[in-house]
Each structure stands twice: as structure tokens, then as C-alpha cells.
Image 1 (cartoon, rainbow, N blue to C red):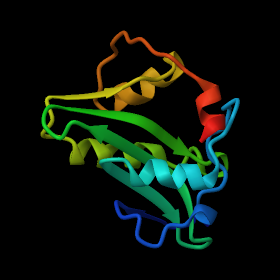
Image 2 (image 1 turned 45 degrees about the horizontal axis):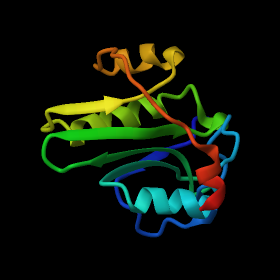
Image 3 (image 1 turned 135 degrees about the vertical axis):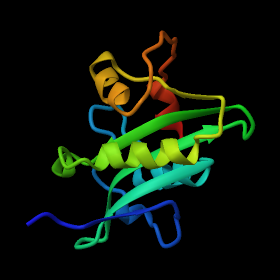
Image 4 (image 1 turned 90 degrees about the vertical axis):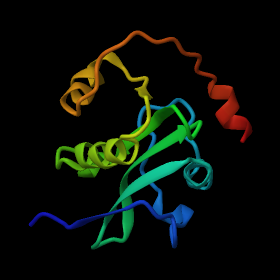
Length: 138
């Protein structure tokens, strides 16, 4: 039986203990406490919560200048909940929240471009710096 997923854009009642199992593949994973701080400091968040375990099983966040541009830095669904459309629903809801911005950007691995194209986004080139030591300091 498929477990019910509840979607919310509120962090009310969310604790670090509800944020386990994220950041697969990261050399240094942010702690659940750091993860909650990231969400709290975002302009917009949407969470997928498993009603049975009351755990966050997926999330997406956006940061923005509040005028023209928004950036979606993180979208993740816990491994044991992937393949159920949760990432698509989180993205759909976030893009709907951000629909009035001139630009909405995502920087993703090439293997994820097809996912974002299916969500209505267009491929583009980008540049980045990743500093795993910064995660360790926080």
C-alpha cells in the first residue's frame, strides 16, 4: 500500500529529528540541525511528509532577491521514497510559488536535466564552486 505524503510550505513543528536520510552522495553531509537552518533561511520551502512516520521524505527550497530572480539550490527525496513522484510534485509546487519571477534557476548534474525539462525548465550552461570544507565548519 502506498503511504500518504502530505505537502506543506510551513516549517511549524519541524525538528532536526524529522530530517534524517538526506544529502546522499555528499562528501560531508550537513547535519539535520544544519539542514533545518538551511530551510529556515530560505525564502520558500516545500516539504513532503510521510503521514505514517511523520518524517520529512522530500524537500525543495528557493532563495531569491524577492523581485526578479529565484534560485532552487536543493531538491531531494529520501532514497526509500524515490520513484513515487514526490520530487515532481515538490518541483511543481515550487515553480507555481515562483511563477511571477522573471528568472528561476537551477544548477544540476547533467543526468538531472531531463527531470527539470519535464517540469518545464530549459537547459542552460552554468558555473559553480563547491567547498566541502565550508560544510564541515558549520
